[in-house]
Amino acid sequence: MAVIHHCPCRPLLHTLFSSTTSWTSTRTLGRVWPRSFSHTQTTPPPPPPPSFSSPLQPNTPTRILSSVEQIGVGSNVLGAKVSVLKQKMELLGINSHDFLIPGRFHHFFCPKCKGGQSMIRTLSLHVIQDGGFAMWRCFHNECQWIGQVFADDRAAYDGFGKKFKSFGQISEESLGLEPLGSELIAYFAERMISEKTLQRNAVMQLSSRKDVIAFTYRQNGLLVGCKYRTIGKRFWQEKGTEKILYGLDDINDVAEIIIVEGEIDKLSLEEAGLCNCVSVPNGAPSKVSTKRLPFVQKFDLQFQYLWNCKENLDKVSRIILATDGDTSGKALAEELACRLGKERCWKVRWPKKDDSSYFKDANEVLKHMGPVALKKVIEDAELYQSNIVNQV
Image 1 (cartoon, one colour):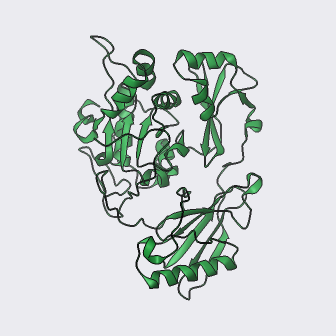
Image 2 (image 1 turned 90 degrees about the vertical axis):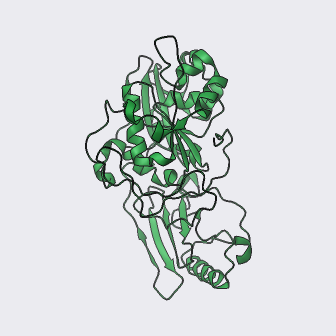
Image 3 (image 1 turned 30 degrees about the vertical axis):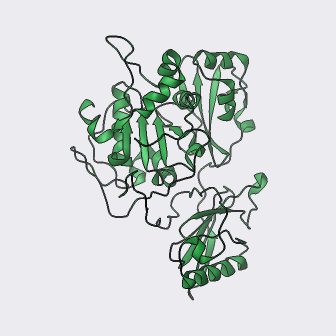
């Protein structure tokens, strides 16, 4: 079985989808996101150029080799094309230096907005594999600069895209958040979650209500959403913010991920040494939908967060579904597997609690069996296609 990634995460394995393959389950489903590679593949083909319809998530910058031969392309023609692209981008203010490898994403400072007040690298740039053109987009909310340059005689394009609704316009101050107090730290301690893990994941509380936990949702380090929870398990989310997976930045550079049903389960897996984990933001459906899977994201409202995180998920070769063991949790696993591709999904079986019942989720296993046992349960996940379908 493939090895589960531990903190810190290892470099990303480039395993992307093709543009032709679709999958259909035994019940009637429409086309899902295309894919064609399993986690066992060792020589992935070059990634397709990204669409500007969803945010790009660039790879962590690496040391770029200077010659065309070192990059592995072995082509003077390709080197010449990249050189032309760099010259054209420099005229528009994008100074890429030597950090350009065809087929990869790169992250630069935007010459238009300079990264805003945070001064971070918000410009995501991609050169297609054959060096024919480069495209970019700035994901700073007040900028949204997009453009393309071509290696041939076609004119460059640059302009400004449509801004995301309320995306990036919130802050800890505007939401009235503050560090966790002793009461909530003690609450998490009872659930075997340490203060170190809470701080790493920027778990906070409302300053106006000391009993309300605030799970901050971040993308590229920026606060983009917040989900609230009382100790009595009442949930609500900040209105008008982008729906994404909780812990999204933890899967930027990994080939294998774990998806759980709640934020506390994500924190629990981190206590077991597994950081390559994200949580769905809005829980589980009561049952598997009988409708055909939507062809486009605007009709898939309940799972909009998957579309919003598509760039991250497309790169993943193995997905462990560690949703709750109840009926709703199994329904969520089925819905996720249908959209993400059952051939790259594994499913966790929670261990027995007693003669008549099983543990429900990651936090229950952590509390009653400890972090070593929880890690073992995740490592023993089974291939989804032979697992859960008949149980839903």
